[in-house]
Length: 200
Image (cartoon, rainbow, N blue to C red):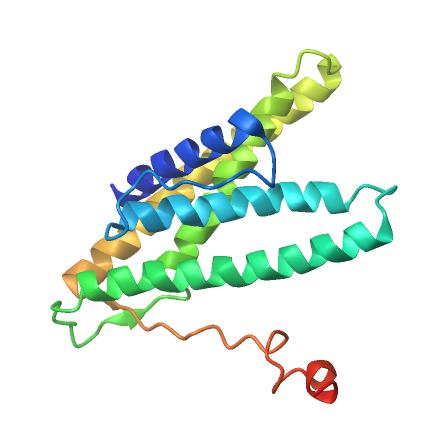
């Protein structure tokens, strides 16, 4: 199943990041560039670094200049994340390009890659909630609360994985079809963002 295949790669990325646990560490992709594994690993690495950016920026004592620099990094990371989702969708569009769509085929509310994006974030939630549930210096109440949340996250993984695999099977059989709209973000574009346009 593609969902399990992707989740395994996400877990490898998360484990590799946490060896150094540093948002400024260098990135190396262990998978070949012409393979979807390369995209999946890169996608989760972006998510993992951004997860920790979001932790850092919530420090109430953070220097305002550092916070602004970090906000710029988060903005850039969001753009990279969106780009990777579009690359993954391009992989699926190419994979299913020869499928003959049935006359009564329907479209899904989201593309496969955006569902996989949710699975990547869920992998991070599971990793960090498990970490909290097993933290030795935590109170029993904290551990119990986190274990209960972890149980729900694991159920959510099962449901989301089932939905992703069913969507891919439906597309492959022609029961559903893919239609991808490029993300028309406006805030990074100096022609579309009035603040940036005013600085030209």
